[in-house]
Image (cartoon, rainbow, N blue to C red):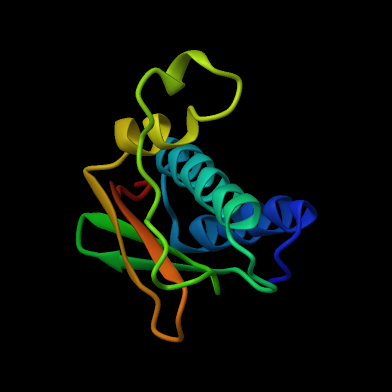
Length: 125
C-alpha cells in the first residue's frame, strides 16, 4: 500500500475483514487491528518508503503480523524509548509489547525492514 497516513485506515479495514473471514473472536480482531495500526503508522512515519506491506499468517494458536517497509536496511529497528509511555507519541511499541507474546525486527526481503508481532489466536465457536 502507499506509505501515507490514509493507508493506515485501509490496512485496518483489510485486516478486520480477513480476521472476520477466518472466524477470529472479537478480542483477537481488536488486538490485531491495534497492533497493525501501530506498526503500519510507524512504518509510514519513520521510513522513507513509498510502499508499506502488511501480512497476517496463522500458526496454530498464534497470528503473526508482519509489516514491511522500504527504508534503509542499515537503519536501527524500532525500539521502546524510555519514558515514551508518558508522551503523546511513542506509546505504540508499549502497546505492541503488551498485546504480543513476542515481537521484533528483521531485514526485509527486498531491503528495508520487517517488524513482526505474534499474538494469541482464538476463533469463535
